[in-house]
Image (tube, rainbow, N blue to C red):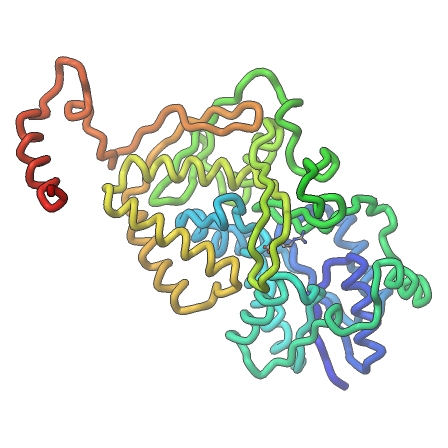
Amino acid sequence: MKKVVLAYSGGLDTSCIVRWLKDKGYVVICFVADLGQGLGEGENLKAIEERAFAAGASKVYIKDLQDEFVEDFVLPALKAGAVYERKYLLATALGRPLIAKYLVQIAHKEKAGAIAHGCTGKGNDQVRFEVTAGILDPSLEILAPVRDWEFKSREEEIEYAKAHRIPIDVTRKKPYSIDRNIWGVSIEAGVLENLEQEPPEDAYCMTKSPTQTASYPRYLELYFEKGTPKKIDGKPAKLKHLISQLNEIGGFHGIGRSDLVENRLVGIKSREIYEAPAATILHTAHREVEALVLDRELAHFKEIVSLKYSELVYYGLWYSELKDALDAFVESTQKNVTGTIKLKLSKGCCVPVARKSVHSLYKKELSTYGKEDVFDQKLAEGFIKIWGMPYKR
Ligand code: ARG
């Protein structure tokens, strides 16, 4: 019998895929990756497992990958300052290579010759899964039923599910395509496809509307050590817990929404809205420590690297040599990125208001306009003459 390992979410598409593959003669093994999409509670996981079996799975793996996700994928991206097209903090894109890594691992363990995913043929996620799998084990066959099957609409899929007694979650009433994990949520389709319309409030799931948040600000202190967030308000916290707390606090103050018309890898422009409260707060604070401790040239060069890094993540090239090389560069920039940032969160805004670091390059005696000034202003004259020399006509 041919065996396939499927990345299973519990939703309509992947549930239909289980049955569809089974009818094509495959033994289907489902893999559910918990990246903090809110499965958490035992209840929910149990329901997903049951649905997989009801759809025809012969085995179900459920793995809590939250720690690995934040330590090995989110953290390097945070240190790198990776933001795609200025607005997308890459929650979905960072999760895909990790899921693909486990699909390959489970395929090896189960001696399966194929892996499968439920992505459409129009998005970035198919690319991320398949490129990653291709790097990790090029001998595996990759199946993408949604690209090949006969269903033309969601309604047809629902009919198929009903006809085959696949239990589907009809309580899902949000008319959007949603992908969520601990680093943020990506929301598209439905009315969001109309670019001339503001996203309706019901599209958001992690944040309050900034107009509806508390009238008082929340001050927050984050401590970083060599680029890694270590403490929140003076209390040490494991990265996963720190992120969860920041999602809670940030969401309460309406932090981390963005609305982006982005360039997909497959050449399509699409509109997607994102919510990433913790990611927004952490990127803001991390950038602020860097502003204090990196010298000018290093800081400016790192911005170029950030840009490239975000593209590699978005394009599914996590396991590429260039990404490894950039990681080494980024890591070397982080040795002095230690310090505490105080942020003010209010009405959807997150702004640094105070900072300190033992590695700070700020010298008040040089920048001050007060009487402690030690900067020799006479030196500026010669400096400007020489520095501007090549441009004089
Ligand atoms: N556009 C984002 C990306 O390519 C998110 C894709 C998944 N979005 C979704 N709503 N299902 O990374």
